[in-house]
Image (cartoon, rainbow, N blue to C red; front, side, top):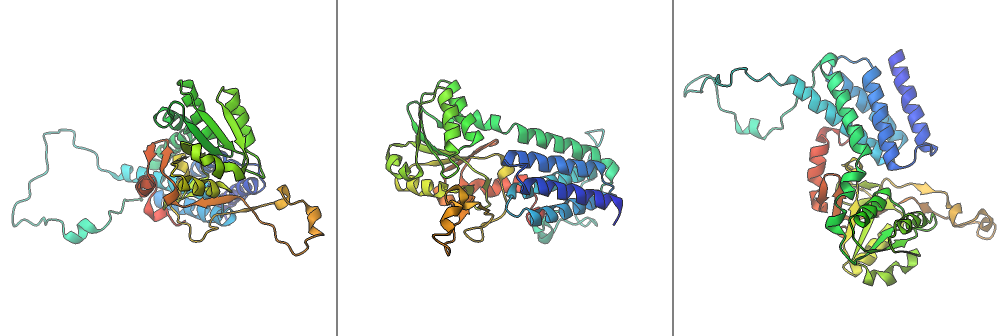
Length: 360
């Protein structure tokens, strides 16, 4: 194994270790750390052309996905960087435009050796060239990754700026747990003069809802904290539900905090729309194959002390990290590119990733 490969393996192992041991926790921090790690690889590694670089990034992606199967954001960033490499390689291979705009290619005359494109050639997908040399593509790729890092860092702003379009005067809005996107969304609406009330479901056993409730109250927004069990009773007086999410799956479903599925079912019973806030980096081109896809299990001691083990020696206590909310329960997604329905997610995925990279 050469020194270049050893250095990459060390970078991968250190990165996976930090995430597994909670040194990098939020999806935003994981996304930024993944993009920065890939930028370091692109900048410091030796590769011949774009094809060689993509094979290297895919190899890194396979290793990270195998070590971090439940952190879907890591795979999303890798797919996006691969898409950037494909685009920059294709741009580098494009022939320059003629200097004189009046000069055109000769016309095709009947009987000439040039043939019209066949139906097969029109239907087959165009394969972009990925043979550009490293000298031609390294600088543009690094520049695009820097722009992508800036997009990730600023995704809160374009989402928050849409608050006025979705929060109206005198509304009662319910949210679940704590989300930085939701907090800034509400703060922007308040700053623009909207008067509304927020009901925060506390999200036991982590009780993360208490944190966002304190921050919203400090901004002058009337805020009420309720238990998870009370959401069905209060849903009848709620105008809409606005929540954050850990990931948006390919079918438009949500991977979100455990317990949000209960809130979504209550909202559907009372025909209350659910609005999910998510940065584009949370778009995942994978489908939930089973109900616990991409899920993780947390320590159950948050609500089941170890002392009860003596009383119930055969009990199994499960504390899931995420819930899956199917797309039929979600009304609208608000991303940093605008608002979209669940049926439009496929189009965003096609623009954001390359289909060849869906499976790492």
